[in-house]
Amino acid sequence: MIKLIFLGSGSAFTVGADNFQSNMLLIDEERNKLLIDCGSDIRFSLHEAGFSHLDITDIYISHLHSDHVGGLEYIGFSTKFDPRCNKPNLYLSKDLAAELWNNSLSGGMSSINDDIADLSTFFEVYQISRTSYFTWKKINFYLVKVIHINNGYYLMPSYGLLFETNGIKIFLTTDTQFCLERLGKYYESATIIFQDCETSEFPTAIHAHYEQLLKLPKKIRNKMWLYGYQPGPLPNAKKDGFCGFVKRGQTFEF
Ligand SMILES: [Zn+2]
Image: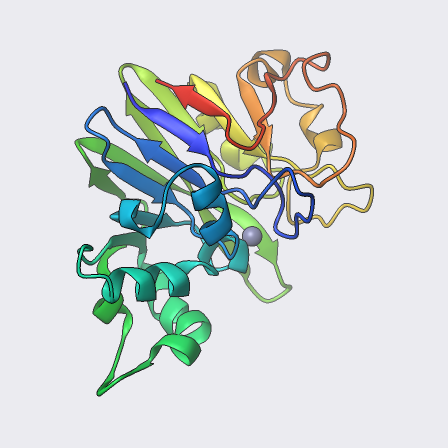
């Protein structure tokens, strides 16, 4: 049995007191933990759920927005200078590693006392090759490339996860546009889906919107939990055939 805890289930700029950014913690029976995305809210969301940097031994990063990587400076420094911690393992798609350091983290983290640091100073980095997977505690996590942003020149992907445990196939989309052609086969094969879902009245087009997800076939909606939503009133997702909106702290067991 493994547990998936949503430390938060809100959008990037969630400001409500009752939610945080959508980062999750997977915990196996031996209390090993895999943090799925590490946003700028993490030092609050982790503590609110009863954990601290001492619990962070393995981290997966889906893409480079700050609600997914903005907490790595906190985790990196906290674990490096705490003698109780080992260097956390960091799993990410190969195309993200250099950018993560050069464009997101190096400004604050490259200078440490008496040395110049790089990503490997703080993390044991595992770069995952294209269309491949990583293994954590005997579970294979397959990367599913999803379309997050098209800037007009190229696509900026995010990497969702598909994994199976105890005969249950779990598909976690991470940040994605609505794209049935691309994701349909994963929706079909999954037992349970955790789907990025925007609820804003001003759609951004870089996240699947609730109104778009309503068009999915009933059999897909019936196994789909929604997260990544904005603060404020929510539609009646259960009435519309979904499993519901994930609440902060909600835990799933597989
Ligand atoms: Zn994003």
